[in-house]
Image: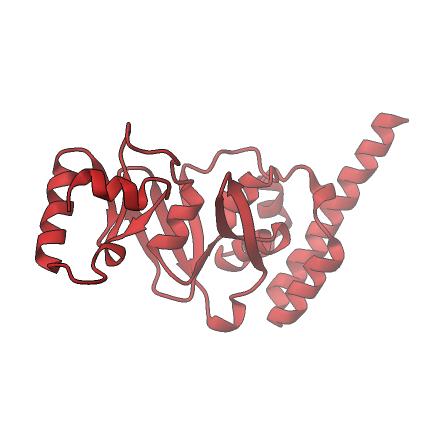
Amino acid sequence: MKFKELLETVGDAPLFESALLLAGDVDPGNVRRQLSRWTSAGKLIQLRRGLYTLAAPYQKNPPHPFLIANHLVSPSYVSLQSALAYDALIPEYAAVITSVTTGRPERLETPLSHYEFRHVQTNRFYGFRLREIAPDQQAFVAEPEKALLDLVYLHPGGDARSYLRGLRLQNLDQLSVGRLQQLAQRADSPKLERAVANITTLIKSEAEVGYETLS
């Protein structure tokens, strides 16, 4: 395979896996050697074994960091600080892309970004949906309420009012108290139920401040 043929095959895709090129009557060893040479030449970026993206100037559709996260570890969904920042619920930009997985916890560094995957049990792997994060790109991202509760659940003392205040939560009108309660009840977690009570207090406080400002 020539590089021009590769561009014709994957040129519009933000990411591609080597398995795509191994289908049919091809020499797997030769394909892998070509991928290695193109990576060394700066034409491809290898994100993990078997996962690649085209390098500039060949790249037509740069992969969003959330899309990469979903492909680095499966199953997983973007959550915690990254999802909260994406929905403007916390002011900080999350330099490390944080996700939740039923697999083992790990930190991965790629040429494009750094990623952290936190482990949860299978019965807590819910509350996310496929969202359009860039033109022609979709990724599994936690609902705002689940991203916050994931952070609370995985952080020691995350249900404390002092910890929740320290997050500097904003735009709390985007959160549904009813949905927070549903998610906490499904988890059957006293810690999350305490957190929801404290979050509800914060939401009411912000609403009252906003009302006084308008008055």
